[in-house]
Image (cartoon, rainbow, N blue to C red; front, side, top):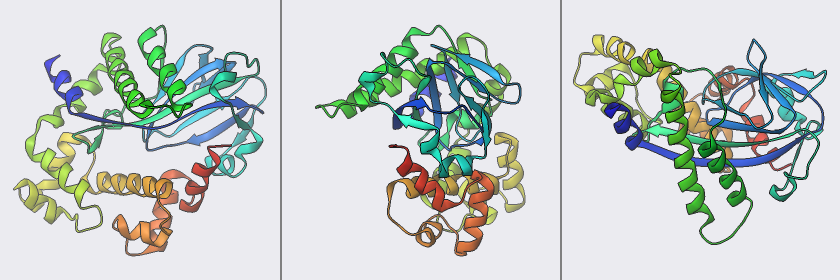
Length: 307
């Protein structure tokens, strides 16, 4: 348990956004994907997710780790099947944002969601690194209370609301980890995939990658950072993390690209260059391959979140 305490202490948690959504038309998004972790609470109606169409009922919470591609069905009854790309283009036909004060009185199907980052040493997405699937959280008062407090605070522009949101987001993340541990979910993944957070050479590599996404991140450069041979660094990285370093680097570059698309007015060309892609066309191809939508539509998606 002490190892998990150290990991929790190392986590940098960042709230991203919170929304209340009314379902206008039942839909299935076949390839939902986001780099951020997402927690969804069903207020009225139901959701289904995954290949097995697992049911999430009223009052239950669905946790989707960042980086997981998953099918989600919103609402009861026959649904329209859409790709993530198609959904983003026509989101206003299926979803409508609700003010916080209307949630309790709303009888139509609706849900609320919160997205956030939780990174070990502010570098590695913790939940994504564990390679765990989406899962349902039931009968957990502390998570539900933190979730609802974040929603309420995010709807008010009162003094200290950002500080309160940060506090409750931290609580929600810790309680989610406790839920996993207490219910012995994904024990093998937790035991195996959290071990590399204790290797100082690997932590040096993570930190270097984070600070140099626009530069040279070849295996030769990573080998010099970790003080191992170039021939060995790829094997060493994959042995501890389960992925090869160049795949990890691409994920980190794309994660930063998504953040820039959402928070800056830089052009696609500039963003591609900022995350290490000199060839804009290649950057756009890789972006669409990873997220299922073009970079420009990812930016439009963020603007539509307020609908």
